[in-house]
Length: 289
Image (cartoon, rainbow, N blue to C red; front, side):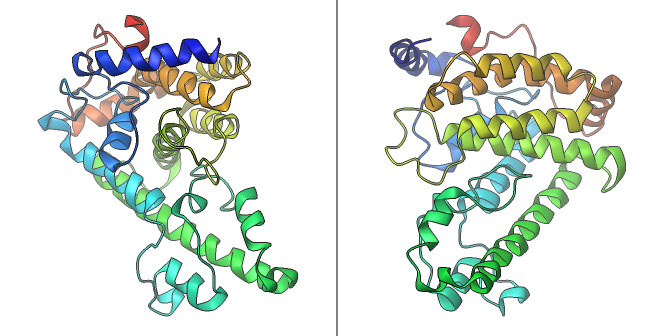
């Protein structure tokens, strides 16, 4: 698939966007609402015409907003005892003299090591980067903050969906969080969004995180979907194009997978919470195109 074709798809999707249940790919992600609706579009829940959650599902939209803002885009974090009452970013400012743009922070997979090549390159400009002990101390701050953010996500997920905090339900929750988290990262990589992608995890690497998340939810049921997205990824060497391919495939296939996973046990959870599910005769973006 050539980039020119993708360009035409994006232009077409922009025109069609107002008429689709699933929001179009390729809108600028300058605010959290677009991210939230894109994340919501890969889930099996009913949406209004503008892609927002129906009244039965507003708690899910709030959950996604927490993930996109508190876990990913809020680079400063919250005041925390481990940082002597300072937020994560201010602690880095004070203790290491470190400053950076927000996409250098937490734009990696939910279950990924909290570090990136872009951060490696950034800290190399600081004198203390020549001291291995200082570098390790710096990296430990990221581990602590990532763990705090993940606990927040886990707690909110259990609250919204009624999952247990241990056992198989904990694994389901982790996998679902990881997929929607990764959709945010893929959304940051679509063309016509930004000119600076430095710091955002490459879609080809996000793919591995998604594959692991699907296995965590249901290894057997996800086998075909994992194979499908892995094969689709081989169809292009363009990371921006791959972001679109993965988002579109997950919009089409992840909702159905989630409802059938674990012999429908996750679907039962959703219904018990009173959520309204998606009608699968609705046309998706890719089926229209």
